[in-house]
Length: 395
Image (tube, rainbow, N blue to C red):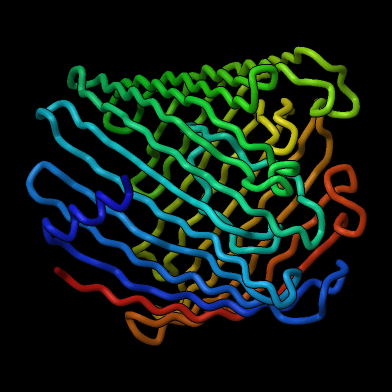
């Protein structure tokens, strides 16, 4: 589907981006691994088109890593994405998303961080678990979804979505560590605008992860939220609800401190966020803060655990060519899987030209012994240098 979308975009005409990011990082001296630098290459190809009421984008952005834990082995994770949006009527918009990811990789807490998402549009958080040291995982991750956004009135809007996913290891060795799972996801959100600066939302998110007929886990979250824009530059979100989880686990996959059979959990679902964007000040800056508490499904055991997480990010631009950034994350797993983790990153990016950027930075992580194999728990850190280039054109 992603390939067909890209071919359609090329036929319709639009814009393209070609980019390459190279990062060289030193291995953490606190964990056992070959004392050689790790090199990561992230090329990107993106195309976009918006003829009339139809908008579409697609791309390919593989992640290639060599050295470090993998030694002389080169790991490559191929990633494709396609997004389409169509205005069916002045009040109704249809959106489609497809993502495909397959290849080999090493799970690490010291790689580039993912962009945080709004906690009031919750997704299943990443599990604070590490795979065995120096273990190369061959995995696949596929998803496809549809959503329909409707303006019911001047104040009410409704979004209904559904998706299907397939993810896990492929090959006997990788599947023994990372089980292959599949299942549906559904999302329903109703928004009501109280005023130009205040709004209310009611959301329901459900998912089911199926490994086999006797091994499955389901999540259901129901939440009410309040959103307020205090100024043009400051907004906040607050939400609360309930998270329900149910799992059927054979004895081999059950966490050590839980018995076989069924497992249920009901926990309060909470989320809060603060966003500050000051682009026109003497010192331009952006700041975001998120906090969540929810049920989650472990991709290693397909068991249920509870997760509380907080993360923050700060960007400051003292000069037009200089960007200083800091980010951090703290998470606590409790329930059938207990432990803690923390991650932080500091970086400085210099952009001497529109298409070129140089970055120096450092990342650090801490993982409790309950969540990591011997030798990987405790404190880890790495320093890195990266260069990124991007070029844009039309077709």
